[in-house]
Amino acid sequence: MPRLIHGLFCLILLLALAACGVQDSDATRAETSTAPQSLTETTEIPVIPTRRSTSSPAPAPSASSLSAIPSIYDETIPVTRAERITISEINLMLEAGQLLMETNWDGDKDTPLPLRPENFNQGNLQAYIEDEQADEQDFTIPAELESLYIGAEATTEIESLLLTAHGEYLAYLEAQGVLPLYLEEVRRVLPATLERITYHPENDPTAPPTAVESLQISDERKDHSQAVMNLYPVDIFNGAGGLEEARLLGEPPTGANEYRTYHRQLRDMALRQLFWHEMTHVLQRAYVNLHVEDPAERTRKSSYLFATHTLFKDVDTQYHWKWGNGFFADSNNKQVSDESQADGIAYEMLTTLYDMSDVQKAAVWDHQFGRLDKARQNLNEIRLLFEQNYPDFTPEEFGDLLAEVMSNYPQNEGRRQLTTIAFRLAAIPAYIGYLNPMEPDDTPKFWEALRQE
Ligand SMILES: [Zn+2]
Image (cartoon, rainbow, N blue to C red):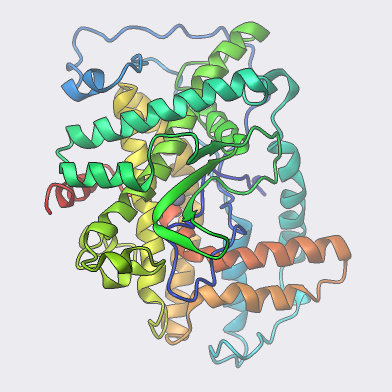
């Protein structure tokens, strides 16, 4: 079994969900990123990035004029192919769905699944348990890199970069022709201040997911039209690991100091990409705010239900599911699009603002999204299986039912791990978005919507 690792993913607490808010939890750091490579794995001589060859086209003017980010353009990076991974909870759901075909379960969410843990492939269950246990180790920042993430100096540096990245995000939007009213609203939803953007310098592999959340305005009340952002080192470290595997900056140097310098650059890239993903959730919220006519409605969590336009309905619906009887279809499909767009826009910005070559762009795509091919196929199978056989069932309910089955797993530790894995399926709409990032060919539609009132 390939390892399943936490991703650079967040939950979209701010944007989430229908009035019930049942999925407003942090149980869902999607498990889809790569582990950082061991530093000793390579002994090859580091590749010195080369300058742009004279025959290649000039960069888009937007790339260099928008920010002070130095170009990393290189057509000669080593070609790598990401290991294809699967995701335990997706595998588990697919196997359960296939097993259900042999039973008389009728798709009623109040009817327990007529399954026992013994019905499942025992080797697979064991592998999921082991992956879960390996996670903590993989997500701990190693001692030699810790000072790049933890401590006063790193914190000051990272906080400063977050504020810079906020400016870069708005400048990029402006260059795309996004109307000033949206830019202003983004600044209102999440101003560039450390009171609202918080970095938590803890080396904790079980930290909550990096997320944009609604602004707390009193003990009981939140203003969902405004946001705070919380960022955790583990998500940045993970992102940096994936970029290292993609060899964007060539092979990692073997010397300790050189490797630190190399990793620092990857850290900054991963931080920006994570931050821009989150900022896209801020933008999605800003867009909803401005399309809800009654300002009093804007502070509500589910205000998108009253919006005359939303980015999730107006831009892309190709990854949306039917969601059974459809009661929560809008809420679920909103999460699908929110994550798909956030990943696609952050990818576009990363590759554009760092002035990457086509080879580098392809490497990032493969290591972040290509490696999820198999998981994506499994998810599509799940969709077909449920839509065809249980058309009234809403798949986001499946996690609870499956956790109930796994609570009968005979061994204590395994039972805990398997029920945890199953419960993550409550976030299946977000997974669909992560596994189907908005593709570069589709982002022009996104920008076009933001050029209209
Ligand atoms: Zn997100």
